[in-house]
Image (cartoon, rainbow, N blue to C red; front, side, top):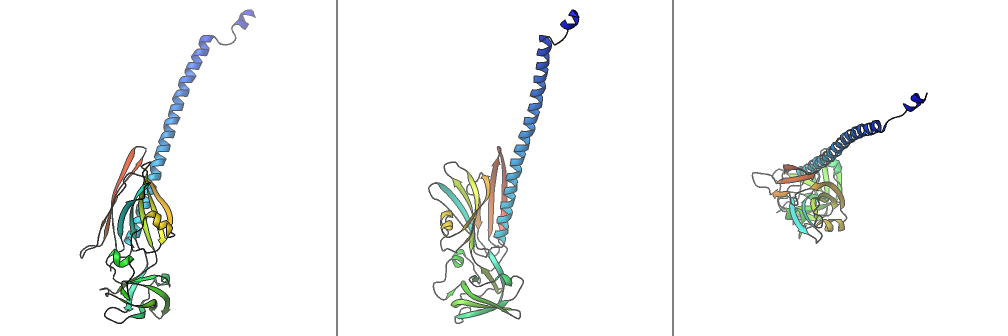
Length: 280
């Protein structure tokens, strides 16, 4: 019995051996778990940035393609704490072909008619009516007198297959559209790449629902006009990625985007072209 009792338990060598083996197993398993977790976190961050970039590019491309001809303009500046580059455009609410409109050298009038189509239900009073806009100045600057490229709508009604338009004041358009195109729009919108100078962080912001201004506004000016502000993308590496090429007799206006995103030390670069599909 004395010999049996003395053989119970573990020796110090056995305990140390077990502790070493368990330590090796714990280190191996924990390193595997940490490595797998790190891969998951990094891949999730990459997927998030890629999703943001795809969404931003798709949204911007759609708005540029459906913008009012001649409405694209590009500006950059700084307000002391941050710098910005903004692409401004006027989204089209609806478009159609006009039947009768007062066009120079005709006399001014307060009414006109256009064809009724599937988008005519979105036309309403208070919107702008544009005919043959060619440049940004003609889009954003109001007419000095009773002749110009845009007029405000006071009333809209439907009869048969026609859209009856009543202007806010007696008006005539400076030039007829070769295809008799007429566009309806309400507000402007902008895509702004804003860099915080202190941190160097660059993000893409979307501003919408603000008035047409003769001079292109900064992000702060847009907010003062009641604009809606939305964050589109972050982790951007290029402060001024936009280039604007105006319309010519052979080509529509086009925007060139050279954009980079940085996540976990990896840089994803985009070279993307966006063309205005609508024509005057």
